[in-house]
Image: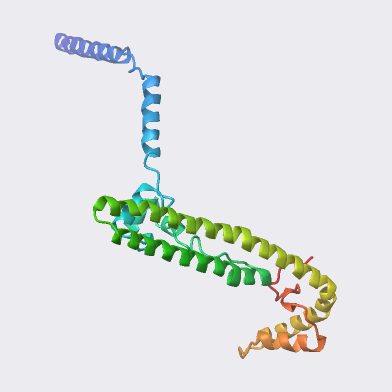
Amino acid sequence: MHELRFSHLVVFCMLFCANCSRKTAVSSESPPVVDAGAARTSSASSDASDASVSPVSAWTDAPIVDRLRENCAFDPRKLSDAQKEELFGNRFGATELTCLGSGFDQSCVYDPCFETDERTCKAGCLNDCTSCDDTCVSSCFACKANCGDDACRNACAPTCASCKQTCVANQDGCRSGKCGQAYADCRKKLGSDWKTQNCEAVCAQYTPCKNACYDKMMADKSGSFDGPACDGKCKAPLKTSCDLALCPGRYSMGMDMK
């Protein structure tokens, strides 16, 4: 019996030592060496590859010119969302090639100059751009109609692309330059008139009346709230040409005139 136990013990020790040897052998192996230079080269190649597929941002970019070769009236807004993602990198890049661009701005406060700027000046810029774009398309079709082969017809597209890009660039200049100056002039006149007509003193009479009228209507549970009626009631006795919507107060959305 003792011999049997002894033999078992010997076998156990042999297995234990063999296992230790394997662990030592594995841990003594050197980790794989990473070539930092090769890694940097690989990373640079990847970055260069990504940069080579930059999204479209102008009519004169090659993918857009190719579309104009197929159709002078190509409208990027009519592409599917998937096509826009592929071409522009997002679904909204197509609008940057149109006269509408990023659309009209918004103001969180009442600003008569801003309202006029959006309604007249920038609307005029948009109309001019649209007319310009229509001319580019018509000229492109006329160009192709006078051609006798595909080489000639394809050559019409770059000219059309340049024409359209000029329309968009001119509108950007119109909105930021012409309209920006018109807005600045309007604000300057508005501030001057505000002081000349002593509108701050007029507001001191108008605002308490308006607040009281609005408070009374707000407390009326019948739901018959009529803000313009309050405004007219409080303005009538003052006989002023001041824009009282600019007066500060609890119920005012006017900009700060100070």
